[in-house]
Image (cartoon, rainbow, N blue to C red; front, side, top):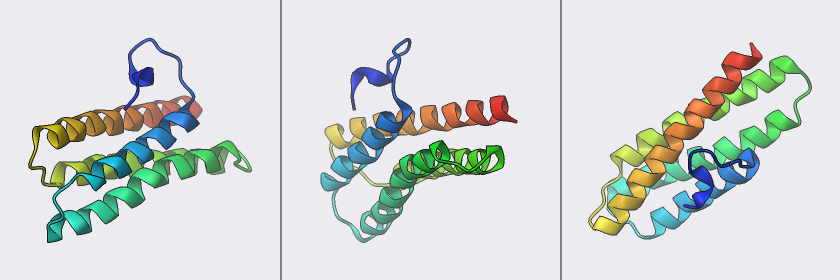
Length: 121
């Protein structure tokens, strides 16, 4: 994770969502590969990558309705990412700390996209 998520810092949301997906992939690499973690990690990788991909699509939207739909998908995927992060089993303090940071980031992204939806409707 980087320092851009600190309160009061300005940030590029495209870059922030990219870093979230990248950090999730790094996190998955250090997990114990139990059967449950393998399956949950696949879902987590998909949902975390979908946050940024849909945000980029929203920025290229064809109109307000398309934009709002994409932003709502971003919010949904961030929420889903937090869910999978909660399910994953960690064994070490390092991976548990990283999981908690990623959950915080997923929730922050969810709140940001929720705010965009409220302001755009």
